[in-house]
Length: 460
Image (cartoon, rainbow, N blue to C red):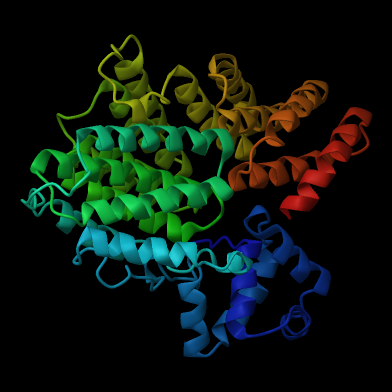
Protein backbone atom coordinates (compact mmCIF):
# COMPACT_ATOMS: atom_id res chain seq x y z
CA UNK A 1 0.00 0.00 0.00
CA UNK A 2 1.42 3.40 -0.99
CA UNK A 3 1.50 5.77 1.98
CA UNK A 4 0.86 9.47 1.43
CA UNK A 5 2.52 11.93 3.79
CA UNK A 6 1.78 15.63 4.11
CA UNK A 7 3.82 18.43 5.60
CA UNK A 8 1.66 18.26 8.72
CA UNK A 9 2.54 14.60 9.34
CA UNK A 10 6.24 15.21 8.70
CA UNK A 11 6.16 18.12 11.15
CA UNK A 12 4.36 15.94 13.70
CA UNK A 13 7.13 13.36 13.38
CA UNK A 14 9.81 16.00 13.90
CA UNK A 15 8.07 17.20 17.05
CA UNK A 16 7.61 13.64 18.32
CA UNK A 17 11.36 13.14 17.90
CA UNK A 18 12.02 16.35 19.83
CA UNK A 19 14.13 17.87 17.04
CA UNK A 20 14.44 21.43 15.82
CA UNK A 21 13.91 22.05 12.13
CA UNK A 22 17.68 22.33 11.61
CA UNK A 23 18.50 19.10 13.52
CA UNK A 24 15.73 17.21 11.68
CA UNK A 25 17.13 18.40 8.36
CA UNK A 26 20.65 17.33 9.33
CA UNK A 27 19.62 13.87 10.55
CA UNK A 28 17.30 13.12 7.62
CA UNK A 29 19.41 14.62 4.86
CA UNK A 30 16.47 16.79 3.77
CA UNK A 31 16.99 20.48 3.03
CA UNK A 32 16.21 22.92 5.84
CA UNK A 33 14.08 25.06 3.51
CA UNK A 34 11.95 21.98 2.74
CA UNK A 35 11.43 21.21 6.43
CA UNK A 36 10.37 24.82 7.01
CA UNK A 37 7.94 24.61 4.07
CA UNK A 38 6.31 21.53 5.59
CA UNK A 39 5.69 23.41 8.83
CA UNK A 40 4.25 26.40 6.99
CA UNK A 41 1.96 24.59 4.53
CA UNK A 42 0.94 21.58 6.64
CA UNK A 43 -1.76 19.47 4.97
CA UNK A 44 -1.61 21.62 1.82
CA UNK A 45 1.68 20.04 0.72
CA UNK A 46 2.31 16.37 -0.12
CA UNK A 47 5.76 14.81 0.17
CA UNK A 48 7.39 13.26 -2.88
CA UNK A 49 7.86 9.49 -2.98
CA UNK A 50 11.61 9.87 -2.52
CA UNK A 51 11.21 12.16 0.47
CA UNK A 52 8.68 9.80 2.05
CA UNK A 53 11.40 7.15 2.09
CA UNK A 54 13.71 9.46 4.04
CA UNK A 55 10.99 10.41 6.52
CA UNK A 56 9.90 6.81 7.04
CA UNK A 57 13.53 5.95 7.74
CA UNK A 58 13.48 8.51 10.55
CA UNK A 59 10.34 6.91 11.94
CA UNK A 60 11.80 3.40 11.74
CA UNK A 61 14.78 4.53 13.83
CA UNK A 62 12.57 6.19 16.45
CA UNK A 63 12.17 4.80 19.96
CA UNK A 64 8.84 3.16 20.97
CA UNK A 65 8.01 6.24 23.06
CA UNK A 66 8.65 8.55 20.12
CA UNK A 67 6.51 6.39 17.84
CA UNK A 68 3.69 6.49 20.39
CA UNK A 69 3.85 10.28 20.52
CA UNK A 70 3.74 10.42 16.74
CA UNK A 71 0.84 7.94 16.52
CA UNK A 72 -1.17 10.06 18.97
CA UNK A 73 -0.68 13.15 16.81
CA UNK A 74 -1.66 11.78 13.39
CA UNK A 75 -4.52 9.88 11.77
CA UNK A 76 -2.62 8.66 8.71
CA UNK A 77 -0.86 5.31 8.09
CA UNK A 78 2.56 5.28 9.68
CA UNK A 79 4.77 2.54 8.29
CA UNK A 80 4.89 0.56 5.05
CA UNK A 81 2.79 -2.56 5.39
CA UNK A 82 0.93 -1.14 8.37
CA UNK A 83 -2.76 -0.46 8.45
CA UNK A 84 -4.50 2.79 9.16
CA UNK A 85 -6.15 1.25 12.20
CA UNK A 86 -2.87 1.15 14.14
CA UNK A 87 -3.04 4.82 15.03
CA UNK A 88 -3.52 4.21 18.74
CA UNK A 89 -5.98 7.02 19.59
CA UNK A 90 -8.93 6.18 21.82
CA UNK A 91 -11.98 7.97 23.18
CA UNK A 92 -11.36 9.90 26.34
CA UNK A 93 -12.41 7.94 29.46
CA UNK A 94 -16.14 8.08 30.03
CA UNK A 95 -17.10 9.33 26.54
CA UNK A 96 -19.62 6.50 26.12
CA UNK A 97 -20.18 5.49 29.75
CA UNK A 98 -20.44 8.66 31.83
CA UNK A 99 -23.53 10.89 31.84
CA UNK A 100 -23.75 13.15 28.80
CA UNK A 101 -23.79 16.20 31.08
CA UNK A 102 -20.48 15.12 32.62
CA UNK A 103 -18.93 14.63 29.18
CA UNK A 104 -20.18 18.03 28.03
CA UNK A 105 -18.86 19.70 31.18
CA UNK A 106 -15.37 18.26 30.70
CA UNK A 107 -15.32 19.02 26.98
CA UNK A 108 -16.48 22.64 27.17
CA UNK A 109 -14.10 23.34 30.06
CA UNK A 110 -11.18 21.89 28.07
CA UNK A 111 -12.21 23.86 25.00
CA UNK A 112 -12.57 27.21 26.75
CA UNK A 113 -9.09 26.75 28.28
CA UNK A 114 -7.51 25.48 25.02
CA UNK A 115 -4.30 27.32 24.08
CA UNK A 116 -4.69 28.46 20.46
CA UNK A 117 -0.90 28.69 20.19
CA UNK A 118 -0.84 24.88 20.26
CA UNK A 119 -2.85 24.62 17.06
CA UNK A 120 -0.17 22.37 15.52
CA UNK A 121 -1.40 19.68 17.93
CA UNK A 122 -4.95 19.87 16.60
CA UNK A 123 -4.94 16.24 15.37
CA UNK A 124 -4.15 14.90 18.83
CA UNK A 125 -6.89 12.55 20.01
CA UNK A 126 -8.77 11.93 16.72
CA UNK A 127 -10.22 8.41 16.89
CA UNK A 128 -10.35 6.16 13.81
CA UNK A 129 -10.92 2.55 12.78
CA UNK A 130 -12.39 -0.01 15.15
CA UNK A 131 -11.81 2.23 18.16
CA UNK A 132 -14.21 4.70 16.54
CA UNK A 133 -16.95 2.31 15.37
CA UNK A 134 -17.19 -0.35 18.04
CA UNK A 135 -18.14 1.81 21.07
CA UNK A 136 -20.28 4.11 18.94
CA UNK A 137 -22.22 1.28 17.30
CA UNK A 138 -22.62 -0.59 20.59
CA UNK A 139 -23.86 2.54 22.34
CA UNK A 140 -26.39 3.35 19.61
CA UNK A 141 -27.80 -0.18 19.69
CA UNK A 142 -28.32 -0.29 23.46
CA UNK A 143 -31.90 0.95 23.15
CA UNK A 144 -33.64 4.17 24.08
CA UNK A 145 -31.82 6.49 26.45
CA UNK A 146 -33.47 6.78 29.87
CA UNK A 147 -35.47 9.89 30.67
CA UNK A 148 -34.92 11.19 34.19
CA UNK A 149 -38.22 12.13 35.84
CA UNK A 150 -38.50 15.09 38.17
CA UNK A 151 -39.95 18.51 38.79
CA UNK A 152 -39.22 21.42 36.50
CA UNK A 153 -36.44 23.70 37.64
CA UNK A 154 -37.77 27.08 38.64
CA UNK A 155 -37.85 29.42 35.64
CA UNK A 156 -37.32 26.70 33.02
CA UNK A 157 -40.52 26.32 31.09
CA UNK A 158 -41.60 25.83 27.51
CA UNK A 159 -41.07 29.49 26.63
CA UNK A 160 -37.44 29.41 27.75
CA UNK A 161 -36.88 26.15 25.91
CA UNK A 162 -38.30 27.72 22.73
CA UNK A 163 -35.92 30.67 23.13
CA UNK A 164 -33.00 28.28 23.47
CA UNK A 165 -34.15 26.37 20.36
CA UNK A 166 -34.30 29.63 18.40
CA UNK A 167 -30.83 30.57 19.62
CA UNK A 168 -29.48 27.20 18.48
CA UNK A 169 -30.92 27.86 15.02
CA UNK A 170 -29.24 31.26 14.84
CA UNK A 171 -25.90 29.84 15.95
CA UNK A 172 -26.12 27.16 13.27
CA UNK A 173 -26.44 29.81 10.54
CA UNK A 174 -23.24 31.41 11.84
CA UNK A 175 -21.15 28.38 10.84
CA UNK A 176 -21.50 28.71 7.07
CA UNK A 177 -21.71 32.51 7.17
CA UNK A 178 -18.66 33.19 9.34
CA UNK A 179 -16.78 29.92 9.99
CA UNK A 180 -15.06 29.49 13.36
CA UNK A 181 -13.26 32.26 15.20
CA UNK A 182 -14.68 34.18 18.13
CA UNK A 183 -18.26 33.15 17.34
CA UNK A 184 -17.28 29.57 18.12
CA UNK A 185 -16.59 30.65 21.69
CA UNK A 186 -20.13 31.99 21.97
CA UNK A 187 -21.54 28.65 20.82
CA UNK A 188 -19.39 26.72 23.30
CA UNK A 189 -20.46 29.08 26.08
CA UNK A 190 -24.13 28.59 25.23
CA UNK A 191 -23.62 24.82 25.14
CA UNK A 192 -22.10 24.96 28.63
CA UNK A 193 -25.13 26.87 29.94
CA UNK A 194 -27.61 24.45 28.35
CA UNK A 195 -25.64 21.56 29.81
CA UNK A 196 -26.22 23.00 33.29
CA UNK A 197 -29.97 23.04 32.60
CA UNK A 198 -29.95 19.47 31.27
CA UNK A 199 -28.29 18.32 34.50
CA UNK A 200 -31.38 19.40 36.45
CA UNK A 201 -34.51 17.25 36.83
CA UNK A 202 -37.28 18.19 34.38
CA UNK A 203 -40.56 16.77 33.10
CA UNK A 204 -39.97 14.44 30.11
CA UNK A 205 -41.13 16.95 27.46
CA UNK A 206 -38.77 19.68 28.63
CA UNK A 207 -35.85 17.31 29.15
CA UNK A 208 -36.20 15.86 25.65
CA UNK A 209 -36.32 19.31 24.08
CA UNK A 210 -33.33 20.51 26.09
CA UNK A 211 -31.43 17.44 24.90
CA UNK A 212 -32.34 18.44 21.34
CA UNK A 213 -30.94 21.93 21.90
CA UNK A 214 -27.79 20.41 23.35
CA UNK A 215 -27.41 18.16 20.30
CA UNK A 216 -27.75 21.07 17.87
CA UNK A 217 -25.31 23.29 19.77
CA UNK A 218 -22.78 20.46 20.05
CA UNK A 219 -23.02 19.82 16.30
CA UNK A 220 -22.51 23.53 15.57
CA UNK A 221 -19.52 23.59 17.92
CA UNK A 222 -18.16 20.54 16.07
CA UNK A 223 -18.50 22.18 12.66
CA UNK A 224 -16.92 25.42 13.86
CA UNK A 225 -14.08 23.57 15.62
CA UNK A 226 -13.34 21.59 12.48
CA UNK A 227 -13.45 24.80 10.45
CA UNK A 228 -10.91 26.30 12.88
CA UNK A 229 -8.56 23.37 12.32
CA UNK A 230 -9.19 21.80 15.76
CA UNK A 231 -9.91 18.26 14.65
CA UNK A 232 -9.98 16.37 17.95
CA UNK A 233 -12.33 18.90 19.55
CA UNK A 234 -14.58 18.67 16.51
CA UNK A 235 -14.82 14.89 16.73
CA UNK A 236 -15.59 14.97 20.46
CA UNK A 237 -18.33 17.56 19.94
CA UNK A 238 -19.80 15.36 17.20
CA UNK A 239 -19.81 12.42 19.63
CA UNK A 240 -21.55 14.56 22.26
CA UNK A 241 -24.13 15.62 19.66
CA UNK A 242 -24.88 11.96 18.81
CA UNK A 243 -25.43 11.21 22.50
CA UNK A 244 -27.71 14.20 22.99
CA UNK A 245 -29.67 13.43 19.81
CA UNK A 246 -30.40 9.95 21.07
CA UNK A 247 -31.56 11.34 24.41
CA UNK A 248 -33.84 13.65 22.42
CA UNK A 249 -35.20 10.59 20.55
CA UNK A 250 -34.13 12.12 17.23
CA UNK A 251 -32.40 9.43 15.16
CA UNK A 252 -32.62 11.59 12.03
CA UNK A 253 -30.51 14.32 13.61
CA UNK A 254 -28.16 11.67 15.00
CA UNK A 255 -27.71 10.51 11.39
CA UNK A 256 -26.90 14.08 10.34
CA UNK A 257 -24.26 14.27 13.06
CA UNK A 258 -22.76 10.93 11.99
CA UNK A 259 -22.64 12.32 8.45
CA UNK A 260 -20.71 15.30 9.83
CA UNK A 261 -18.24 12.95 11.49
CA UNK A 262 -17.91 11.12 8.18
CA UNK A 263 -17.24 14.33 6.29
CA UNK A 264 -14.51 15.23 8.76
CA UNK A 265 -12.85 11.86 8.20
CA UNK A 266 -13.15 12.34 4.44
CA UNK A 267 -11.18 15.56 4.82
CA UNK A 268 -8.54 13.50 6.65
CA UNK A 269 -8.42 10.93 3.81
CA UNK A 270 -10.21 8.16 5.70
CA UNK A 271 -12.88 7.12 3.13
CA UNK A 272 -13.29 3.61 4.52
CA UNK A 273 -14.01 4.92 8.01
CA UNK A 274 -16.36 7.56 6.58
CA UNK A 275 -18.33 4.94 4.65
CA UNK A 276 -18.79 2.86 7.81
CA UNK A 277 -20.22 5.92 9.61
CA UNK A 278 -22.62 6.64 6.75
CA UNK A 279 -23.91 3.07 6.78
CA UNK A 280 -24.35 3.28 10.54
CA UNK A 281 -26.32 6.52 10.10
CA UNK A 282 -28.54 4.99 7.41
CA UNK A 283 -29.28 1.93 9.54
CA UNK A 284 -29.85 3.87 12.76
CA UNK A 285 -32.33 6.32 11.22
CA UNK A 286 -34.05 4.00 8.74
CA UNK A 287 -37.68 5.03 8.26
CA UNK A 288 -37.19 8.37 10.07
CA UNK A 289 -35.46 10.38 7.31
CA UNK A 290 -36.90 13.07 5.06
CA UNK A 291 -35.90 12.91 1.36
CA UNK A 292 -33.40 15.75 1.81
CA UNK A 293 -31.65 14.02 4.71
CA UNK A 294 -31.61 10.73 2.81
CA UNK A 295 -30.13 12.48 -0.23
CA UNK A 296 -27.48 14.13 1.90
CA UNK A 297 -26.39 10.73 3.23
CA UNK A 298 -26.16 9.41 -0.32
CA UNK A 299 -23.83 12.30 -1.26
CA UNK A 300 -21.57 11.44 1.69
CA UNK A 301 -21.58 7.85 0.47
CA UNK A 302 -20.69 9.05 -3.03
CA UNK A 303 -17.90 11.16 -1.57
CA UNK A 304 -16.37 8.12 0.12
CA UNK A 305 -16.57 6.12 -3.12
CA UNK A 306 -14.88 8.95 -5.05
CA UNK A 307 -12.09 9.09 -2.48
CA UNK A 308 -11.69 5.33 -2.82
CA UNK A 309 -11.46 5.66 -6.63
CA UNK A 310 -14.66 3.68 -7.22
CA UNK A 311 -16.29 5.69 -10.05
CA UNK A 312 -19.18 3.29 -10.74
CA UNK A 313 -20.26 3.25 -7.09
CA UNK A 314 -19.84 7.03 -7.01
CA UNK A 315 -22.19 7.50 -9.97
CA UNK A 316 -24.73 5.11 -8.49
CA UNK A 317 -24.81 6.97 -5.16
CA UNK A 318 -25.15 10.32 -6.96
CA UNK A 319 -28.10 8.96 -8.95
CA UNK A 320 -29.77 7.83 -5.71
CA UNK A 321 -29.32 11.32 -4.22
CA UNK A 322 -30.94 12.94 -7.25
CA UNK A 323 -33.76 10.39 -7.27
CA UNK A 324 -34.87 11.19 -3.72
CA UNK A 325 -34.20 14.97 -3.78
CA UNK A 326 -35.47 16.04 -7.20
CA UNK A 327 -39.10 17.10 -6.82
CA UNK A 328 -39.23 16.14 -3.13
CA UNK A 329 -41.76 17.83 -0.84
CA UNK A 330 -39.61 19.94 1.53
CA UNK A 331 -42.44 21.26 3.72
CA UNK A 332 -41.77 18.76 6.49
CA UNK A 333 -38.00 19.28 6.65
CA UNK A 334 -36.44 20.21 10.00
CA UNK A 335 -34.52 23.49 9.90
CA UNK A 336 -31.16 21.75 10.17
CA UNK A 337 -31.48 20.14 6.72
CA UNK A 338 -32.74 23.24 4.88
CA UNK A 339 -29.17 23.90 3.72
CA UNK A 340 -29.16 20.74 1.62
CA UNK A 341 -30.71 21.83 -1.66
CA UNK A 342 -29.98 21.54 -5.36
CA UNK A 343 -27.00 23.89 -4.97
CA UNK A 344 -25.46 21.79 -2.21
CA UNK A 345 -26.01 18.60 -4.20
CA UNK A 346 -24.39 20.06 -7.31
CA UNK A 347 -21.50 21.55 -5.33
CA UNK A 348 -20.79 18.27 -3.57
CA UNK A 349 -20.83 16.27 -6.80
CA UNK A 350 -18.76 18.93 -8.57
CA UNK A 351 -16.16 18.86 -5.80
CA UNK A 352 -15.77 15.11 -6.10
CA UNK A 353 -15.46 15.29 -9.88
CA UNK A 354 -12.78 17.94 -9.38
CA UNK A 355 -10.82 15.54 -7.17
CA UNK A 356 -11.05 12.99 -9.99
CA UNK A 357 -9.98 15.63 -12.52
CA UNK A 358 -6.72 16.15 -10.61
CA UNK A 359 -5.84 12.60 -11.64
CA UNK A 360 -7.72 12.55 -14.95
CA UNK A 361 -8.06 16.05 -16.48
CA UNK A 362 -10.81 14.90 -18.87
CA UNK A 363 -13.28 15.25 -15.96
CA UNK A 364 -12.56 18.98 -15.56
CA UNK A 365 -15.42 20.15 -17.80
CA UNK A 366 -17.99 17.95 -16.07
CA UNK A 367 -16.76 19.19 -12.69
CA UNK A 368 -17.04 22.80 -13.86
CA UNK A 369 -20.60 22.23 -15.07
CA UNK A 370 -21.71 20.92 -11.67
CA UNK A 371 -19.82 23.61 -9.77
CA UNK A 372 -21.31 26.29 -12.04
CA UNK A 373 -24.79 25.04 -11.20
CA UNK A 374 -23.95 25.27 -7.51
CA UNK A 375 -22.71 28.85 -7.90
CA UNK A 376 -25.86 29.79 -9.79
CA UNK A 377 -28.24 28.27 -7.23
CA UNK A 378 -26.37 29.03 -3.98
CA UNK A 379 -28.45 31.01 -1.48
CA UNK A 380 -27.12 34.43 -0.37
CA UNK A 381 -25.31 34.48 2.96
CA UNK A 382 -23.66 31.06 2.62
CA UNK A 383 -20.22 32.60 2.37
CA UNK A 384 -18.03 29.61 3.08
CA UNK A 385 -19.89 27.42 0.59
CA UNK A 386 -19.84 30.21 -2.01
CA UNK A 387 -16.09 30.71 -1.52
CA UNK A 388 -15.40 26.98 -1.85
CA UNK A 389 -17.63 26.76 -4.95
CA UNK A 390 -15.77 29.57 -6.70
CA UNK A 391 -12.30 28.38 -5.70
CA UNK A 392 -13.24 24.92 -6.98
CA UNK A 393 -14.30 26.52 -10.25
CA UNK A 394 -10.95 28.30 -10.51
CA UNK A 395 -9.12 25.01 -10.12
CA UNK A 396 -11.39 23.22 -12.60
CA UNK A 397 -10.79 25.91 -15.23
CA UNK A 398 -7.04 25.80 -14.62
CA UNK A 399 -7.00 22.03 -15.09
CA UNK A 400 -9.05 22.48 -18.27
CA UNK A 401 -6.62 25.09 -19.60
CA UNK A 402 -9.17 27.95 -19.52
CA UNK A 403 -6.85 30.44 -17.84
CA UNK A 404 -8.71 33.69 -18.55
CA UNK A 405 -11.97 32.29 -17.18
CA UNK A 406 -10.14 30.88 -14.16
CA UNK A 407 -8.74 34.32 -13.35
CA UNK A 408 -12.11 36.04 -13.80
CA UNK A 409 -13.73 33.65 -11.33
CA UNK A 410 -10.68 33.85 -9.08
CA UNK A 411 -11.04 37.57 -8.42
CA UNK A 412 -14.71 37.06 -7.50
CA UNK A 413 -13.77 34.15 -5.24
CA UNK A 414 -11.28 36.28 -3.31
CA UNK A 415 -13.97 38.85 -2.51
CA UNK A 416 -16.02 36.12 -0.81
CA UNK A 417 -13.03 34.34 0.76
CA UNK A 418 -11.94 37.54 2.50
CA UNK A 419 -15.29 37.62 4.34
CA UNK A 420 -15.03 34.24 6.06
CA UNK A 421 -12.69 32.99 8.80
CA UNK A 422 -12.67 29.41 7.54
CA UNK A 423 -9.75 27.01 7.80
CA UNK A 424 -11.23 24.99 4.93
CA UNK A 425 -11.35 28.06 2.70
CA UNK A 426 -7.79 28.95 3.74
CA UNK A 427 -6.48 25.51 2.79
CA UNK A 428 -8.38 25.58 -0.48
CA UNK A 429 -6.88 29.00 -1.21
CA UNK A 430 -3.37 27.58 -0.75
CA UNK A 431 -4.17 24.70 -3.10
CA UNK A 432 -5.42 27.05 -5.82
CA UNK A 433 -2.45 29.38 -5.33
CA UNK A 434 -0.06 26.45 -5.75
CA UNK A 435 -1.95 25.36 -8.86
CA UNK A 436 -1.53 28.81 -10.44
CA UNK A 437 2.23 28.41 -10.09
CA UNK A 438 2.21 26.38 -13.31
CA UNK A 439 1.09 29.46 -15.26
CA UNK A 440 3.07 32.32 -13.73
CA UNK A 441 4.14 33.63 -17.14
CA UNK A 442 0.54 34.38 -18.11
CA UNK A 443 -0.18 37.99 -17.19
CA UNK A 444 -3.73 37.42 -15.93
CA UNK A 445 -2.56 34.58 -13.72
CA UNK A 446 0.35 36.62 -12.38
CA UNK A 447 -2.09 39.40 -11.42
CA UNK A 448 -4.39 36.94 -9.66
CA UNK A 449 -1.44 35.44 -7.76
CA UNK A 450 -0.37 38.91 -6.66
CA UNK A 451 -3.81 39.51 -5.19
CA UNK A 452 -3.87 36.08 -3.56
CA UNK A 453 -0.40 36.34 -2.01
CA UNK A 454 -1.33 38.35 1.13
CA UNK A 455 -4.14 35.91 1.95
CA UNK A 456 -1.91 32.89 1.43
CA UNK A 457 0.80 34.48 3.60
CA UNK A 458 -1.71 34.94 6.42
CA UNK A 459 -3.05 31.38 6.22
CA UNK A 460 0.43 29.82 5.98
